[in-house]
Amino acid sequence: MSVASASKRAPGRRWIPLLALAPLLALLAADAVMVVLAARSDPGLVADAPRRVGLARLAPGAELRLDLALEAGGRVLRLRLQDASGAPVPAVAVEGRLERVTHAGNDRPLHFVITLDGAWLAELVLPDAGAWQVTAAARDAEGRSALTVVRLAP
Image (tube, rainbow, N blue to C red; front, side):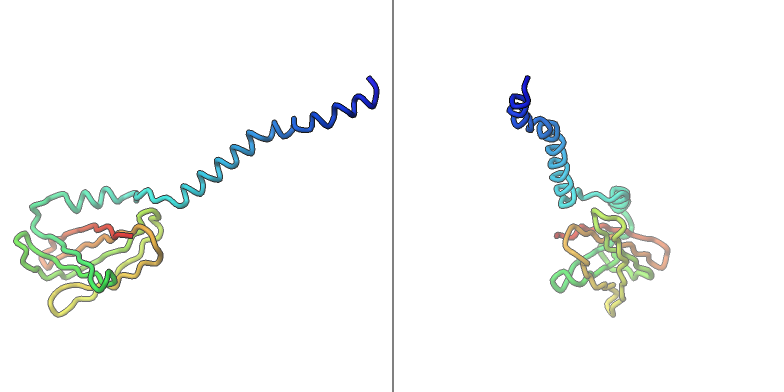
């Protein structure tokens, strides 16, 4: 075989290394697509959310009920503690937190202030867009407590 005939075959075989790289490049492209989809999706899960929701609905005929309402275009959260008949019960302690459903580390405490009519108000400022929920608990003077979990519409 002459040198001239060997050089004629060489340009035709340059695609062979590309053929070996093609599956690797396809795998990298698929991984990039999956990373983008995973980063932009909202699975709606928080590790302990099912437990809290279950505790909030554990006893439907419970002595106390916590009523949570959004006011002022969703910027103010109003919380009222009520007994089983719907009569207001004065709460001595209220706590709550704003939770990012997909990022448990982004939870933020809510600071409630009592009003003259016995309701508790907290300013609701969402740090960024996405799925958020409010978990609130209140206790009356007798030590009875109520818990509620409310998912906020994105």
